[in-house]
View (tube, rainbow, N blue to C red):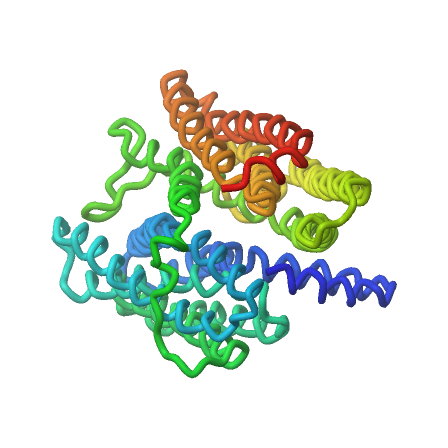
Length: 455
């Protein structure tokens, strides 16, 4: 699944300043585009829609509902994301690419059914109008499927089509919000559902063209002999861990505000953390260009040599090269994300002033920027573990995220406003350190584990 990284490396070989910006820009957009661009688009909609709806509170209601949709869809689709990725990778390895598209469609069917059941069940407790419920449920189902299709973006080399689709989809969402803002909450939610559906189906069209198959739908990915339940748990628990601090604030009766019906928000906490997530683009770009190319190639060479009966000396040499590439990749991420963090810390006050946001959020934004930067490192460490097939160690690491983020967040809430955000940041710091220690041990005993501990 590292195809995009290798293709972007070809762009870098042009050895020009323009090619450098082109490669890193495409890598950043493709790796974090749907999530980051959606935040930007929602911020733009929030600014442009004020004054165009009957009441400004409708804009806040819309943004809060979409935030819940993002959280819920990521958690639910997390059941399938890593499992489906592993299944697809196995199909590529066995040169059975015709199984890719049918199983994607099969996974989308299962995901859609679960989304309807979960979303419909939760909305049954709501007193919103039926039309708004339908718009929310439609958006939820579409988002769950969008996160699944995004898995395939790294396998398709049509980068500018991907970029154009994302920009067009979110452009439609922004323009549509101006046209339909007068219809209130229903208008904004309908535009959101349509634009996300547009992006999803265009991406699906690309997948169908890139991975043709004679079969329409298959459910081989659910075969008990092919399912890795540890990956199912990793996907769900990771997303729960990332969102649990937000849910802690949303569910706290002292800190939350009922925005509309069953949807709550915490104004003191939400805005800085979502602004901070825009800072992940540089780190994600480096993540894709280095981790998914240099390390991925050395990892493939190591295991290929093991499978083909290479000499012990060559295995040792390739292992050392893999460790070196891993260290360099993590260092590059740390360096680029560290520089980004330093610049944003310096400009944070100016950014808040430019956006018209109260300077009271500044301290919390500082803390959240550090936490989000650490999260990029956590993602890189998890990526290495999945390449090494250390699924249970990865499960332990994501469990650490859930436990530490929940416990530290509850402590920060108890200590008061001056400590808000430290729970999330300390959780990511703890997980990063734990992950680095785990990686060190895994590489140290890699030869023994490769030969002696196979199932």
